[in-house]
Length: 430
Image (cartoon, rainbow, N blue to C red; front, side):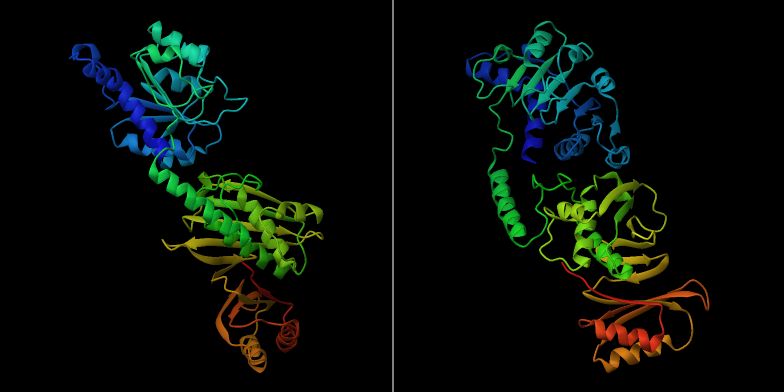
């Protein structure tokens, strides 16, 4: 938030010559006519790099009546559309923007991205803001463009070399500059300290640490984070029903959340599969390596269509013999309640509670009673039961939630009492 607010402050200060006007007034000069600025209302803001900070800037500047376009080769167009922002190529952004704000990391690909060639494509009235990383904007090229009248002004908080106290740009009234103040607020420092403490607690508990540098998947969007434990449980259920370790766990992320980077869910599936195989001490850090040792792979694809739910996730577990187990899940309502909504094509409305029992059998009278009898003899209390079938007398799936652990002996007893083809129990971990 602090970085986004500073970028906006630099944009506003640049548009209205606030720094030179303030300096002139302190020097005893009342120079109203010299510092005629520009409105931002109904102007086009081009955001180069549409990650979290870029999106915060977009949301706030839309409230000022700006038309926002963005360039980001890694963003899903559906996500930009949700935010009322049009994704464009960089060349188009340069040509149509009245203000340009940069929100990219500096990499080999982005170094001097806004340089001599790019600055030849902009409007002469454009103002350019960089409160992200020094070196993405070529400062020498910017100086030439401003002094030659090809760029109207700039707001800078970062520089290619820091500390920077001697730059030709500092001599220009059209430039407002600050000494890398992006996160220099009391609130940002407090949030950073809290984030560190929370991350340490999560790491010690074996949970996923947000933005950990040694976890595959990178930064995790807040819309994706609640799905991590759901996918872990889906993978544990799929592994339990399969009765063996899968060789692949392939996810399809559907609906609203498909517009976000969901690659981390592949690691969630691996972690769940490994836990389902009885491994302990599996974390988001070591899950990919442990899975690779066992020949288990995972993947994530997206589909913006989700006819029955705003968002859902489908998991397809493939076994070495070619058999497939599928589990679908979703998060319901504003509280994001976890639900298993289908297993192997059988529709359910199942909360993934700690202890579960699944039966595959041919639909016939007496199975429900036989299950209840077998569990009752073992002292197992049934919390909930659901039955789904393909047709009367056809294949059926029974899903049962119970209050205590179901041992292998009890599972064998249920199979004997019911004559079911498959009986699997699972105790969800995590």
